[in-house]
Length: 348
Image (cartoon, one colour):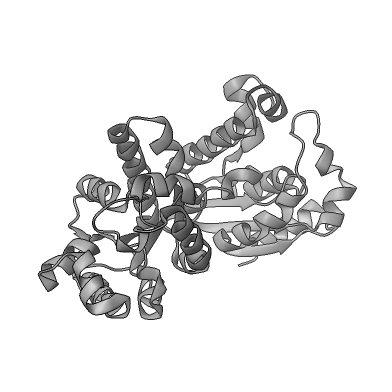
C-alpha cells in the first residue's frame, strides 16, 4: 500500500523532458506499475489527446487529466506516474502531488532544447504553431507550480544532449531509482550529520559531539584528502568545483552506508543537488550549524584557506533554505564556543 515509506512516484515537467520513456524505465527498475496520464486519458475517452483538446477544449481536458491522476494516486499499489506537462496547472492536482504518499520528481531542460524534441508530435497540440515561443511561455508560467510540488529535481538536458538516447534515458532512470530508494529510507539511519557553510565550525563541533557520544567521527575534508592525496582547494582548482562537489557527495553517501552510528561533518555543497538532500534526509538527526554572513566574514571564509576553495558569497543565501529543508535541528553558531554549540546539537 502506498504510504510515506513507500510512496507513488510522479514525474512532472514540460513536454519533451522524457517523462514517459524515463518513467517506464524507472518503473521497471523498481518493479512498480506504470501509468502515463496521456495514454490513460486516451483509453478512457476513446480519442487521442489532440482530439479531446479539439472537441472538448483545454478546460475539460484538464478536468479529465486531474481525475485520471487522482485515480492513479488512489491506487493501493505504489505506482510510477508520468503526468502530462500541464498537470500542475490544476490546483487540486498540485495538492495531491504535495501529499505524504507521493514522491514528485520534476524533469527540467531549457525551452529551446525541449522545442527541438517536442515539435510536431501528434499528442502535443499546444505546440503546433510556435513550439519555442509556447514552451518559453509555459516554462515561465508553470515554474512556480513545478517548484511547489517537486520533492526532487532532475536536469535531463545534459544527458539527452551528449549521450545516445537509450543510454541517457537509462542513466536518468537509474538516478531517479536511486532517489526513490533514498526517499524510502527517510529518517531511518542513526547517524548524526552536521550541515552548514564552510567556516561554521562543523569539524570542531563534530569532533566534540562524537567524543561525547563515543562514536566515530567522519570529516568530509579529511576524507577527500585521504582518498585523493589532494586538498579540496587543489581539486577545485585542478578539476573544477563540480568535480569536487561530486566527490564530496560520494564521501557523504559512503559514510551513510556504515553500519555503526557515527557523526559526520558534511561538505557545504551536499545540499545543492536533490540526491544529496535525499541522502541527508535518511538520517534521524541532521543539525544545521547556522552562521550569518558577518560571522563567516570574520573567519575569512570567502577567500578560502590553504585546504578549502574560495566561496562565492551568493551561495550562502542560496543554500540556507536547502539546509533548512533537511535539518531536524537548527543551531545558531554566532560567536559561541564550540563546546556550547555541541551542547545545543545534543540537546533533544
